[in-house]
Length: 88
Image (cartoon, rainbow, N blue to C red; front, side, top):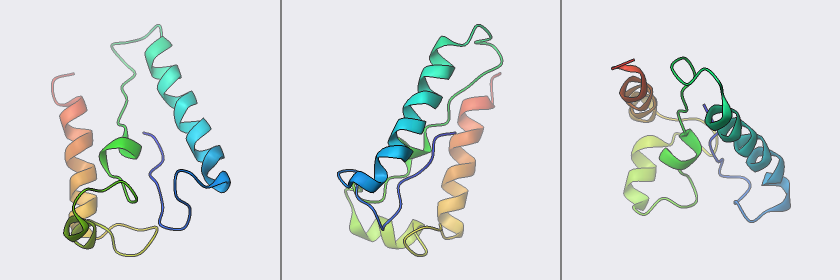
């Protein structure tokens, strides 16, 4: 799984660059893995955005504070994980 954004540092903030680099390393690892039947990517960074969320009401539903999710957000995370692994 990639690391989600947080409300403190926007993707343009220099302090967010380490998180972004780590996420790129995770994505690259999954893509280049020789065990494609065993390694899967759950891209929480893309699928549960904070700053780039289109619907601010949705942010209120899934984000508890600027770091943690509400139960609906964790349900979304669980669904994303399930969708990736359900047929594996």
